[in-house]
Image (tube, rainbow, N blue to C red):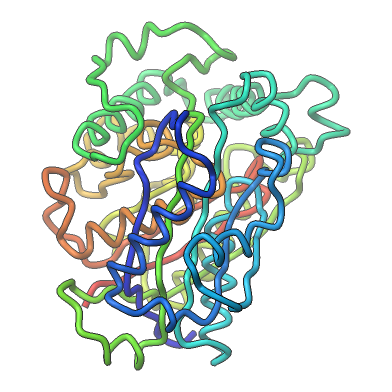
Length: 388
């Protein structure tokens, strides 16, 4: 793929934002990204917008024109992408392909979700549409139950990593304490995390990600245009994008302790970038549940199968470990605004690669990887960034 640069980034605070509409969130994050890019909004030639389920949760479909109108972008073409929790990263991938093809030079990419105003039952029903609604959700299957089955199978194939799952949550909350945009900025002890109320055995309260309102946007451009624009930041390039899929239903997967879509998308991205897992300095991975982070780090080749829990216990994935994972706090503590999550991951990587992460800044941040899953690992997008 042709070299593409990220000119600007912007996001809202993540959380329960009762006084903010979906339009408000889009306007704030999009404006921040354009201002951070240091360009006139008239230079934006297209919009790609990730959103999962606004028709059901807010009654709002046709999201692309909302972005254009809210930000005053005029008659630019707009596209909305949907891929469950990978909706935002799919928007980015579509934008990358359009810029690489020479269709556009400068594109705005975003993602948003407004969820917390609805009752828990309504949100759960909406989220369940990311699995097979007829064969799974209508039979009473939920995502906590689904990933509890995955965790139990992992325990059977390898070993019980319940304590290490708690350590995943502990690391996430410690990182979120240093992130002003994070939803859950509370200092929980490991003992409190491990003694939390059960949700679906072996998952307890702290093993599950958050319900979140929020939005994130970035401005991307081809490298020639990007290099012609003065910036106060270190330039960050997108050097690889991989995308793969798997069966919608859990029962149809070849394995539920390794996600085929993630491994295939990662292989594509590593090949494009000419890199190995050892070359990645940090990663934002899709920790919808704590067991998922452990499996994800194995699928990405950071650790051997069955050894992801050991890596957490040894401190390798902590903020200043050898392979920092989810320096933002991840879905677990920064928050999970479903359609915006993939772009929020990119926001964190760019912040780290620029050296702008403040108290949570890691020592070496040159190459970062974003790993975004949709549904029961039915969709995966991997994006690799490099600072220069």
